Length: 305
Image (tube, rainbow, N blue to C red; front, side, top):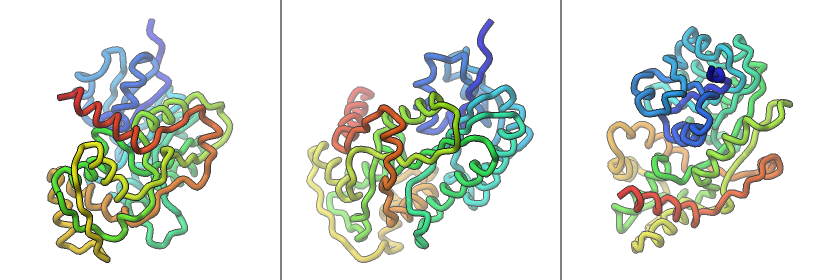
């Protein structure tokens, strides 16, 4: 008789959630996945993994999915599928918090975003990420919240924007906030933080800021990606991101990613660096730097061709 699932994974069809699911598939009996279209996910995963129908905007479906669950991963972000993503992310988080508390879930593991909460110019995207974390913490369920900047890996929309810009524009007219500091993290390291979080002793809610070994600028990211691809690129700074320039950048993404990309670009003006090193103390993990993270990504590109 198989062991009943004790871990719920939301966001399994997304990039980070999908990578985490791959990591967990060696212990499939412990995993239950929530999906709005469960048939599609069932066709892709180990048949021993339980896939249940549910929607974070439907409280009753969450209550069913969380029954018997000890720890739940909340990797949902409605940025790309809603005209009012802040409101829907708020509702979804409230639903999940309520359902988790009612079901007796002991811990929620959540991936949010870096950024100074006191910054009055914080982008709507990052502001919403922080708000979701706060709603989950107010549930009374223990929460492990990770805050990360750009994730380097194939499938990460933020990194794909960097790739598209570098690959397609030999000369880039760039806003000055391409000098904004950021602390990217490799997808392998982000997934390992998430996996290891479920092994922490049950104690209290904690917020961990996580990033790679390097603090760089978005311009540095473009230059390093270009260097590894053997490309020569010229970046010309301008004071602001004009509608014309914004449209030029957004033309590089697919229509299904357009809305998400627009909000991500708005957030590039905000510094996203680790200011609290508690994650380095709590986890036996030494994240790699930008150079190695990009090398891994390009290596994956070559293997998949």
